[in-house]
Image: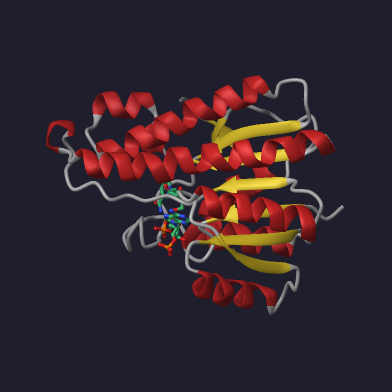
Length: 234
Ligand SMILES: NC(=O)c1ccc[n+]([C@@H]2O[C@H](COP(=O)([O-])OP(=O)(O)OC[C@H]3O[C@@H](n4cnc5c(N)ncnc54)[C@H](OP(=O)(O)O)[C@@H]3O)[C@@H](O)[C@H]2O)c1
């Protein structure tokens, strides 16, 4: 059965690839992008092979955009089965929390934590109504506690991802007993604008675990953190 998916930050990088792979599997995919023109270009690139793709304007920090996307998804599709919270920023200028400008921390938490939270809140009622939902929060190993204790790296970004992991477990707990599964994925170090050119992984590899979690069977896991389709430590 084809599903309806929304991927945030889908105009480039890992989000674009997640959207492409979900479309290739036959799903209807909505590309959420904060620049509509870039979104349309991305949707066109995917739609040349998989016509079931559209773009919509979605800045995840903008509540009005979120409300508009909910209205559009309800009227155009009547349901949302898959939500991939992929959009994120990495704008830290120091690896030391004592040197981090709190403006950077606020902006980072707004996008990387409150954006996914807002989209989860907006779409979970629809998923519960249809007794089907797969939510994938694209996180990072940078948010894993073990790493944070050992290596100082991009404090605002790392904290946003450990908080996103915590949020993942909270939603999974709240939704226990429903067919809405909520998990976090670490894509690994991937060659994108964020990951840089020296990263080891391709976007195809980086997108794989998120796509797997987005298409889990009903008896799949919920409340886990995965890389390469394997559970990893928080
Ligand atoms: N690349 C890596 O090595 C790596 C490693 C671990 C985790 N991750 C995670 O993987 C995900 C994708 O990363 P990436 O490497 O593909 O990053 P990227 O190349 O920098 O792309 C980020 C995407 O997020 C969008 N975005 C940023 N802020 C947004 C907002 N407020 N509203 C909507 N969209 C917004 C960007 O849109 P614009 O084009 O408009 O800026 C872009 O489409 C992120 O969650 C990242 O934290 C990446």
